[in-house]
Image (cartoon, rainbow, N blue to C red; front, side, top):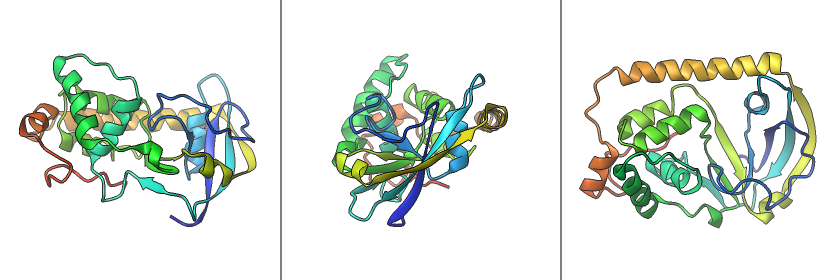
Length: 230
């Protein structure tokens, strides 16, 4: 990551003063300010079918920040899942899913609050559904890793600490027109879901969450895919 980067926050409003401590604690990586390095993705995330949105633009000096990159080779797909299940609200449909949530947090969890800045997949509707299917023993870990790369739905950058907020400087905004960006957002999501359904038609003899728990697998097991962003 370059020391000085430009990030964008897609929103239904102009956010010229991002404030530490605001937001929802049950976001992907907990409380923080969620951004992306892609202006186009920020615009897609900002709109709905009913309204325009805003892509708020900032410069961020990362030189002295403690950065957690969940998409680096140091982490597996299960580290991302563990962080997600700790913060997001999942539909726990089975006893397996209940045990899986605890197993993932205990064995693959990462203390995101120890970092100033986090990068990782954004669990929008599609990615969240894939994670939920894995938690409920519906897809294998190999299928989950493939699904995360299907639609290029995006990587996010989350400003976590008060120190990181002090390094964030507002530069302006662009309007995201719903007529253009909602269509792009929906097309991206539809394509991803179609590819996902096609993938489910293929046979998979991989590791399911129940296998992972029964085998006592840990983060260094070579059978668990690295969480690499493509």
